[in-house]
Length: 327
Image 1 (tube, rainbow, N blue to C red):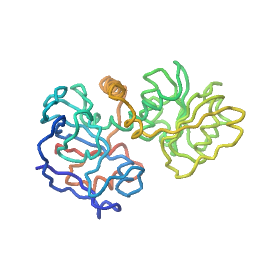
Image 2 (spheres, rainbow, N blue to C red):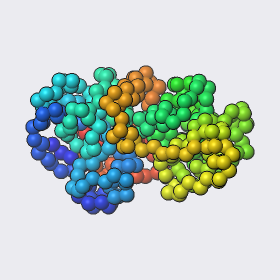
Image 3 (cartoon, rainbow, N blue to C red):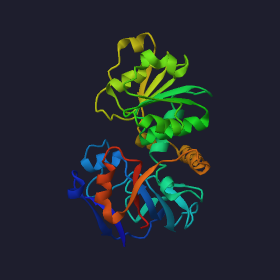
C-alpha cells in the first residue's frame, strides 16, 4: 500500500487534490519500484492542477513533474540498478510514497547528495543547463542576459554560468532582489525599469550578450532583445507576463537576431539516454561541489498536500516548497 497525491479534476487544489491510498502491483519486467523521498512543487505543477499546462494527464492521476527516490525493488531483466540506489525518475507522477517506472526512465545519482536539493535537479537546473549549452557556443568571459532572474531557472543560470566562466546580466522585478542575486553570483543585477538599450555600455563595459533567456515575454523580452549582440539568440522558455513577443523588424533585418524556444519535456523526449545521463551527472557534480544550490522555503508532508500547493502558489517566497515524502 502506498499514498499518492491524486488529482480528480482540474481546478482549485482544495476541490481537486487529495492524498489517497493506492495499491501497487509488483514491478514488471524491466521496471523498478522507487521509494520516493522528496519532490518540489513547480509552476508547471500548479498549471497542471489548474488545467492550463501544455501537456495534461488523463484524470484521475498522480501528479508531480520531478522528485528523487531510492530503488526498493526491481523486476526481471533489470541489472543496472540496485536496491538502495539514489535515482531521479524521468516519469510523471512523483508526488507519492512509491512509484513503479521503467528502468530506462531512471537516472542514477551519486551518494552523498542532499535529498531536498537532489529532488529539484530534474526541471529548473536541467533547463538552465540546456539553454546555456544548446543554442550558442559561449566562450569564457561571454555575457548572458536574462529576465526573471530570481526564478528557479534564473538562479540556476546565475550559478552555473559563474561556475563555467560566463557573466550574467540579470533582470528582476523587485529592487530588494538586486543585492540578493548579486551575492548569489549575478555579475550585474538590475530591475525591469532599466532600459538596456541606453544603459548596456555602462553595465557590461561595452560588451554585448550573445545569448538572451526569456521567461517573461512582452516588454521585458524586448528589453533583453535590445541588449543582444548582432547575430545573437533569444531563447524563450516561459511566459510569466502572459504577453506575446513583440519584436521590431529592425532587430531581425539589421541585427540578424535569432528567436527560438525551449521546452524541457520536448528535450527529454528527444534526448538519448547518454545525453540525459551526461546532463544530470554534470548537475549532480555541481550540486556536490556546492556550485549549485536552490533555496528551500518550507517542506510539507504528503498529508498536507493542499496546504503545500497553496503555499507554492504565493508570491515572494524565500525559495521552493517541497513535499517530504519520507515523513
